[in-house]
Amino acid sequence: MTCHPNLRSGTIAEQDPLPPTRAQRWAALANHYLDTVTYTTLFLFIGLPIYYALDYAMPAHLTLSILTYFSALSIPAKYKCFLHPVLVSSAFTILGIWILALSHRSTLRAALTVYTTKSRYIQLFNGQGSHLTPPGAGDIFGSVLDVRHFSKTVPIRCSSWILKT
Image (tube, rainbow, N blue to C red):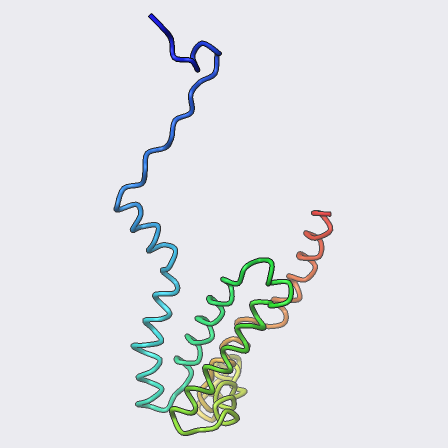
C-alpha cells in the first residue's frame, strides 16, 4: 500500500474551494452593481421625466452627479494621483449638465444657476420655504457635504498617512 506523496512528507494537501453556485454569482454581481443600477434607474425613469415634463432639474442633476462620481471611482489607482475622482466627476457632471441644457434649448450658465439656487435646508425648515426657489442638486450636495464634515476628515487622513510611513 502506497501513501499519497503529500502525506509522506507530513504536509497536508490544499483543497480548492467549491466554485460558487449560480445564485451566489448573481448575488455577488447584483451586490456589486446595486448602487449604479439604482441611480441609473432613478435618472432614467424619475430624473429625466421630471426634467422634461416639469422643468425641475434637481432629480436629474443629482443622479447624474452621483453616477459620474461612481464612474470616476473606477479610475485605476496609478492615475488617481493626478486625476482625483472628485475633479473628474465634477468635469463630467458639468459636461452632462451642459448636454441636458442643450437638449432643453438652454445655456450652460442657466443650467448651472438651476444646479445651485442658494436655497439652504435651514431656510426651508425655518418656514421661509414658500419664498425660496426649489433647491437644486448643488444645494443638496452643499447641505450633505458641508465644509464642517470635510474639516474633520483632513486630520484623519493626515494622521493615517503619517502612521503608514
